[in-house]
Length: 364
Image (cartoon, rainbow, N blue to C red):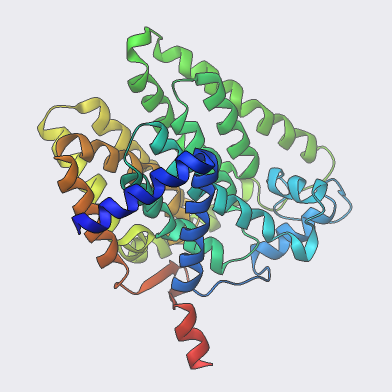
């Protein structure tokens, strides 16, 4: 195993030296995404909500055509101006899935993690439903706001840039709001030495919410949108979501990240034991608010993928507790074992298996 780790590190370092870090990050992202497309069976035709996003991308500001997803403007607007509209819109989220994986490698290399560790961190995202669902549910825009949420956490030392990324995440999907408490806590935790007060972060991120608020008010003045606050917080919707969520939550939670849940579980235990309550609260708030989504939504595994920062931040924290080689070997082995657990997506209708591409074609 040490020999494999050494060869991977040498390969990546050589690529970074000759091609640069950005190009190498994109190469790693491409390799991991290609592997995902073998591990699952990707679709290249919009379905379910993906169809609504595809239709909206034809003309995001045509209010004469009803669309329940009209508030989630950013990806469809990008599709519109890039001419990746309609049947081609599924390419936009796919591009962001690729950029998301690549950016994880880039960020952790900038943090001076070894190449193999940076790949493993990228794998925590690439080899979970965070990306898998994007591949099997073409046209969904989850990877877009995951990408911006990741950047908002990664750039908390540059608070205004972090707030900008968070604002873009909100314009992609309003459920990004569920990460706001943890983001504020993490920004304060990371920047404590700067002397900034917690109220500063509340104010900055509040400003980041305003573009979404103003856009929703503007759209509402021109047309009605089905998926609004009244819809999500209606008694009928909450009753249905809770009735489905309670019985399926454990399975839905597990299959979002499978064995990668080890990281937040262990770190919650360790930080509580060590009286590192600030970090404990960050991870706990990500998980709690992630689960709270299920009070108003019932696409269980898919919704819970928003909690991916808990996986990354916990793994990063774990690395500070363990000897470097032990950490690398452990994450590598855990990732390999994770592949042997059949992947399911849990939603209101039950369990949907995701089969590898070779298996799917063999059965056909």
